[in-house]
Image 1 (tube, rainbow, N blue to C red):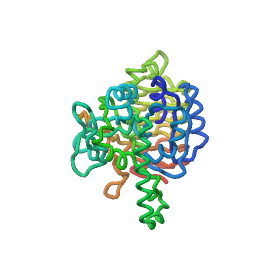
Image 2 (cartoon, rainbow, N blue to C red):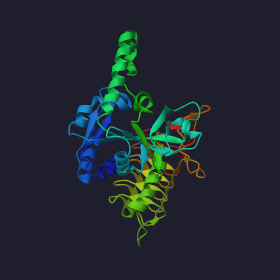
Image 3 (cartoon, rainbow, N blue to C red):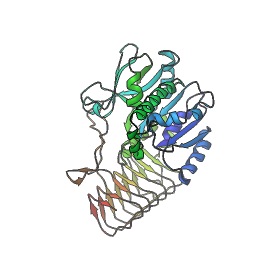
Length: 392
């Protein structure tokens, strides 16, 4: 997911450095990825780990010295759990044309009236695009323009975040018993949310502007929504990087629609792939295999005549001969141009919601079984078919 963010940032002229901020313990796979990305995009990339989950503003405030150390005139903040065309250059030009040198820009897009309630809603001046009102996940309709989680800030943003920090410190000092509940982190003064704590206060003060994009954008709130995000990126590649997509060639597999195949993957010539398929590093696909609307991660093996539909196949997993692994798509309404993907809960009425099938890493599916609408946790060796289950 993060590679798309890095690629978009690396395209911006004058970009000096990319920082990944998170609460997660860095591990070998992340370190390898960052080294490879630095070499590919020729830009310094570092991971900075928060000592606690500090919220969307608390993290950048905690690392403000690192962010400003290169004398940054401006910097972008991108939420990791979104996919988009990331029109960063356009936001930069828009920011230079609107407001003063200390103004900030939010990337916005249009949602339908019902789904807008699930996002941060922006009311802006139609002429100047100044944000006059901001509400995070309102209970009643406010606006069809929603926050995409992509921002352009100048260093002046830290003054506004600092005001929130000082106010929260004072409130905790007045109510010290709140601090005793800080084991979950939410009562710390350092936990600051850009959306509720900063944007709500900045709206209407001539500091905040919205750049509306007509390009694609989606949240990635569940593993299953990665399939839809992959489709959006593959469709973008068909216009911007057609060389990245597989083509039908003599002696090669049958390609339907947009398909990405890593150069190290081994695909039998009788396999049929697509539309909207991504095949990772070192994957093996046998004879007569059918893959559609799926992501197959590195090292996986699909043995002869398997059928994989609406599925994420985890690293180093194996699917036996004549097995069928299938999920249920959770796409937005195709007849509504402003529809977004719904963040459905895992369960509905006490039952697992039918959705994308997900095989964790190193899962083994035996020959001639059917796996339908299921989630299989890593390192499982199945012995039978399963439907609508979470296999622990």
